[in-house]
Length: 253
Length: 146
Image (cartoon, rainbow over all chains, first blue to last red; front, side, top):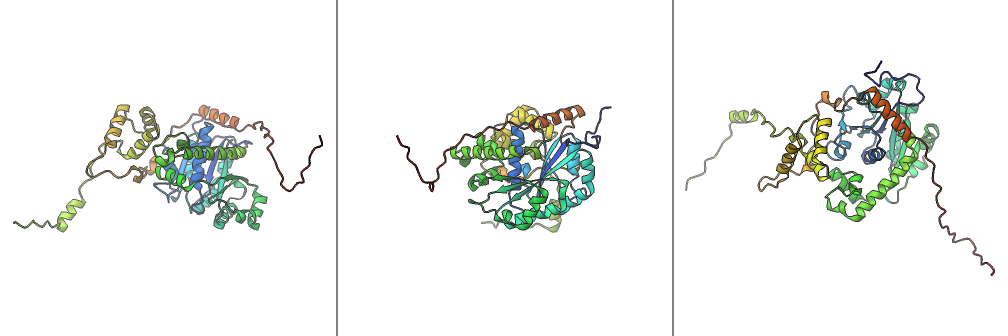
């Protein structure tokens, strides 16, 4: 019989996931969660992979949130009692892959939701990928370790080393003994996001433009129409896409 | 010269002013103004915008309506210029609508999407990188005998 609800009627003992929720760990603010999320969405788009977007950043309402770059992203307020149930709603509509960008300070809600809902999600073929952003700021590492303590092995981990300075010093991630223990136990995939020129980043954020729009000269913003900006946008995309290709097993089905 | 009359807002008048009903939006496209104008700047066609509005926002409008809307909103005003469109916030989505903005897929459509995504996850044959030029400044150099 044809099913009206593709999520609920998934076989229970599924070896391969039939859905994947990819979400940024909403811990410390300003580590580049949304910047990475927008590039991740562009990567999916380059592969023509169907996906749904959820903007869970309730702090950053106008500029700089995922919906600012992708108006089709649905806004979700995770502070409501139902927490992250929007994950389920979106899957229920049929989207096999969901990308969710969480705002800073979403930890408690997310942890409570995983405690009560993860088992059902797993039994229905849903896999989770948690994305942690590491910057030279040690607080970004603490945030990832805190999330790891709650999420444990209920998710797969993708760590993005975001070079917010040039050169970027990641010794707080490389040399920290707790981080080393986390790497040993959780076995995250680790990729690098290269340093991006602040002027380009700021203009893109200001105007809600993606790197694709800049790379394909689909903008009238003078600073982003410069050939140097266009080439840089193309290079940023190419380099990060190569990194994402390397870990695509965590991002696809 | 007559003195200008001083206009006093009494508490009663203030209450009347505060309780005036809000005016109806001039167009049902108004809540999406910032997005429509941005999509146009990014080069999307009126047909594409019409489809996005219809499928994602559940707003039906013809291409010509959108065209006229954009034309009107793009004109520069001499007085009381409109705020920059980037200053606009996201149109508020009522909670009950948040979860039903996209078309629900059938089981067959979904199965096809899952298959397609799995096909993207196949390992690709990695190209062997071309050997690059490597030079070790500390290594003693040798000269071949002719």
